[in-house]
Each structure stands twice: as structure tokens, then as C-alpha cells.
Image (cartoon, rainbow, N blue to C red; front, top):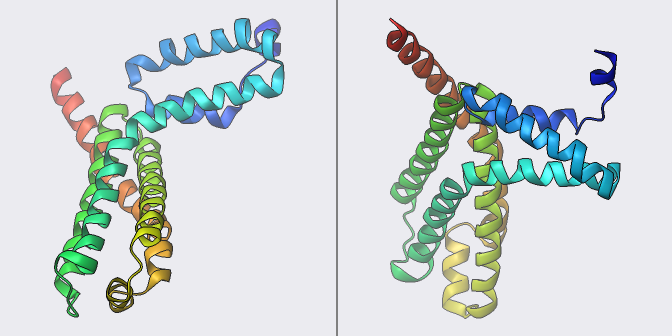
Length: 205
């Protein structure tokens, strides 16, 4: 037992993130395989610091696979709203559009939280998926918006941007959505986990 405890381990927080994202039936096998590769192959060849970085990158890959699609969908909805406000159908009445885009974002966050918690039986997985969704979306939106402004900054476009909240809102709003979005995903995850537990109990009867 002492020999096992003395063996080098990857960062505990990264291992916890990995296990929370996996299905219960996959946790021991997947995390065990990754731990074995870390100890037997990566650590001896790269050293402790680079081995830890390698492990974190593997875990980030699991997070990415869970969140890239909802993150891209959320970014597409934001960029579609920008295109509508700036070029396709400029307006000075934004209430209906803001309401629709807000509820769409909430639905995406709640949905990814629900699905992640349902799949993994872990509330943490729902929150993590929501956090990653918000971060991915914010990066995509800010990068694309920056390119758009570099290409199109004529007076008409700048007037429409000012009318819809200004340049500051274009770049600050996506990162600001991350925290409330993660909370929405956590709520969705709570329902997803409860649904999974109920379904599992009925399936066992």
C-alpha cells in the first residue's frame, strides 16, 4: 500500500475534472489508462513539469469534446444577432431581439449542463461543460468580431454598433456571460443528474 501511495500522480484537480466528466462505468478504466501512461511513459521521458502539462492537455481534450459544439452554437447565435443588428436588419428597438437571444443562450447553457450531468451522473460535469461552453463562445465571438471590425468600419456600421450597445459591449458582453451561463448550466445539471438517478432506479427495478 505504501508503494502505491508513493507513486507520482498528476495534478489532483485535473484528475477530479476528468473523472467528473466520464460516465460512471468508464471512470476507472479511462482514468486508469491515462494514469498508467502518465506514470510509465510520459513522466520518465518528459519530467514532472512537462508530464503534468501533458496530463492537463489530455483532460482539456475531454472538456473540449464535451463543450465545443454548444460553444460554437452559442457563438453563432451571438454573431447572427450582430449581423442582424449591424447589416441585415438594423433597428433601434432591441427588446424583442434581446429577449430572444437571451433565452436562446439560457437554453444552450441549461441544455449542455443537463446533458453532461445526465451522461456522467455528476453535477460538477454540468457546471464544467457550461463554463467551457461560455469560454469557447466568448473567444470565438471576440475574434470574429475583431476581424469584422477590421474589415467593415464604415460610418453606417459604426452607427449601428453604437445604437446596439457600442464597441465595448461587443467585446465585453461575451466574457461577462460566462459566469451566469455556468450557473444556468449548473441548474440544468441538477435536473439532469436527478433525471439520470430516477431513470437508473427505475431501470434497476
